[in-house]
Amino acid sequence: MLTNSPHITEAESEVMKLLWQKEPLTAIEIISKLKDQMDWSDQTVKTFLNRLHKKNAIRFEKSGRNYLYYPLVSYDEYVKAANRSFLDRIYNGAVGMLFAKFLEEEKLSESEIDQLQQLLEKKKRGGS
Amino acid sequence: MLTNSPHITEAESEVMKLLWQKEPLTAIEIISKLKDQMDWSDQTVKTFLNRLHKKNAIRFEKSGRNYLYYPLVSYDEYVKAANRSFLDRIYNGAVGMLFAKFLEEEKLSESEIDQLQQLLEKKKRGGS
DNA sequence: ATATAACGTTTACGGCCGTAAACAATAAGA
DNA sequence: TCTTATTGTTTACGGCCGTAAACGTTATAT
Image 1: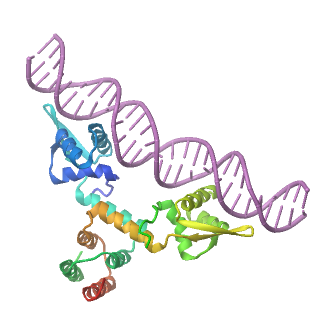
Image 2 (image 1 turned 180 degrees about the horizontal axis):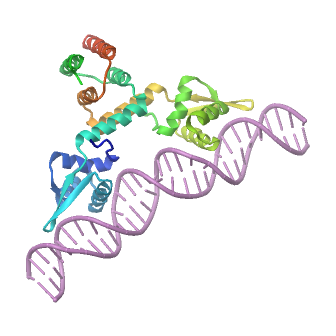
Image 3 (image 1 turned 90 degrees about the vertical axis):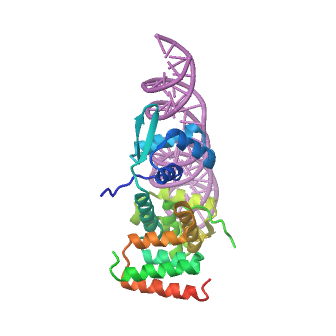
């Protein structure tokens, strides 16, 4: 298992999010979608594609005049890496603390709470 | 209530952590403690003190030849800001998702789980 | 064959960050 | 009063990040 996902910056993650939704995408698709959402110039997006490629977060293959882009880093890897780094950075690795703080600060709906309780119950038994 | 805590970088947070433990501290204290833990030169620490001061995260007052440093941003504010920004950045604000992911990835001890369950129960009743 | 469109690559640039040297001010001690 | 230690301020510099222009390459359409 690859344990070292490359660092994906916030701007770059906007590109990745598209690829996680649908894969592969062509450059035009990526560029035009991002131009809507993010108001970035074509060149900006190209830079991100290039950087993501250099750090092995995506790959592309040519098919005719179209290039098809694929993610090499999965959404799960990305979130996992972000989680770990945040947990270490802010909570020194103490998950319990993190939960406590978020519970203290954020509003949770009744049903969200129920869901969490179920997760915890499951965790108590065989939970990995 | 101040809702805009300034952005404190990781290196700067090492200075803040000391001040959150004990307040006030003199520059020598800060510098020497950090020289142990972080292997930073005096000048580096001074830069951080300066930047933190400029962004109103700390203040200092002179007493004789000593300067006493005080935090202006509390640990709670810092964590809160970090939480929000992480939650928005990675989970688009969805706390439920965040919890689910962390539960999925991190090992929790039996007692940690119990604690969380109690917190959730409390939350279900009057918990704001 | 040639122009053009679609795409990748190189270069740039200001801002923030980690790291630190050099400079300035001032209070305490000699 | 003059030196020195203590502390603050200014400047610097390379790296990453967001933003983008300019340049190069190649496949299709004419």
